Length: 480
Image: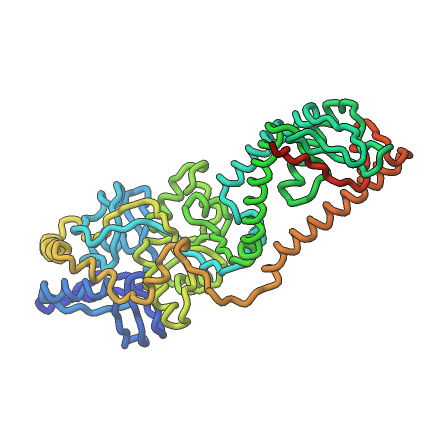
């Protein structure tokens, strides 16, 4: 932490600012700091605003180090610790850091005109593009899949009437079926393919289910419809199954290799459910809100996973956030500087910010001791700067490299040329393995059911009679 000496008419005075001394250039909230002790250099939005206020007031600022490392918390006797306590005790003339208004702080200090408005949000390591192992369910949207599931039982119910309407006849060799009918002939005069006995309801349902499902997966079924209405229902389902099957197969491989982005969390509720360690500043607004929140609320559930930090621990915490060891909560305008610095050094976005904030919007203001005459001098300057748009421009200036990193993750475009990983093929392998497994199960089921000692060519109740090589006999319309 460092403070500034305000020299006015030769009388030095102190005021507290939120810049931490470091030996190398670092991004700290809304300012940059570099240099060595005794030769520090400061830059950034807050420093620019302070310099404008300095020029309008006609004073000189001198920055010195202080031991305070926290915003400050309220004690039972009404006093404050940290920087808030320094302002309350008149140890400094005003704060160089922006504070948010709340009921307790209004009783201790006075607030300037609002410099800006902001909200709380969180930052976490940016998720990487990964293979989509569940791509075989994505060729269709949920509405198309639901529509297909609704059509299946209707098709089964309609085709369930087919065994009652289709009667198999024994036809001699070379005989012609009546007009409009399709029948099956064994090719031998003394054999009938199927008996004319009625099948029971269970056998009828089994046949309907098998035909409906087999048609959908393009598996042939030895069955031919008889009757105009039955053929109409059958043709409609065949057409629907043909369209669904062809579109699915054509899109399946592409969907299995399309990468996906798995977002760990995008709101404070999801953060509370993720059990990710979360860093916050000791004595900050979010710290006070978490302590006062109910256990069942989102902020209350965050209480057990928060890590309270002082200012001198923030740089190490930022590195851990970029490594994915923890998340960090602060004001939204704090993170562009961190992302801009990281992108300038590495050429990539190392973290992402939640698209939905919380605890806002809040006014960001400077604080003064009670009865300070400086407040009346600062407020007109701050108000004019805000009305002409300079404050908003200053707060966002210099973060060009952070523009791409601040976009929502849903707008990320996957690289068009990405080396395929082994995980890219797991979805395809799963489809093939499932197909082979189902085929093996069907084969074993047929072998098991076929070993019951039934004479070849005899119909067993509940089963289809094995069909011999058949030929179609279709009657042609007679010419007048």
